[in-house]
Image 1: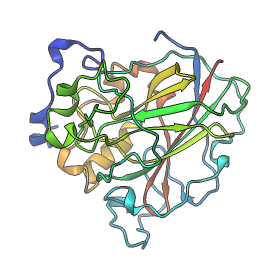
Image 2: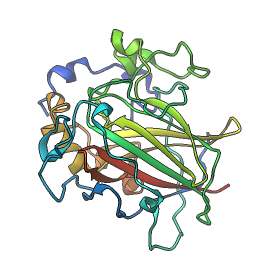
Image 3: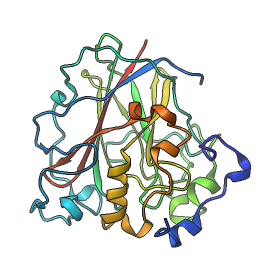
Image 4: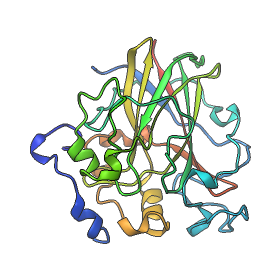
Length: 292
């Protein structure tokens, strides 16, 4: 996208969008493998975000349209699914692709299990599994993620960061005081023996000229292995942004995947698989394959 490619003439934030929301490294060889769903304690939904039931789970938390939970990670009661989530009957062979841009909103964050800092939003289980080209799990790798809040604002407290040299505070935070003093929706986790990390977060919102996305970085021994991004289907994003109580005030995204200049025409390779958990939270998962 123009903004994420650091065109300084366009790095101006989108305050007007909030009030008018109703209007409308070098490349690294990797593979991204979307995996099928599994039998877990989750209620399966397809990648359009539709579910098998419109009933809300009576767990004491608020729910939104189609039973989606609201109010942030405090409403989560479901457990993370086991590793069968990532199993697939497909042969482990993938097309290689290049890394995506880091963008101007990165600064190094902390080791966390819940990266929401009690912010509101559709609670989300974020599950990533890192494997090599032979489908062997890669343990001991850091996977760092960062994304914006329900209004498309990134947090901006870089005071404890070891790497904030490329952070564009004005663009990313809109100079909002609460964002400047926060580290929400940023965190690092280390892959376990299954090559997996689990994080609690909230579904991100949108900002002008980008499809909704989550950034991630893979590092080992302080060396970057990959920087890229994952996104969600247009239909799911439009549904949540139109109907969910925590997002509807901001309206539908102004940029669809086919218009997004970061993902490009191969955006299907970068989409999360999603399900709805029994507690109404979102399960977003993806298998990442890198060549060592």
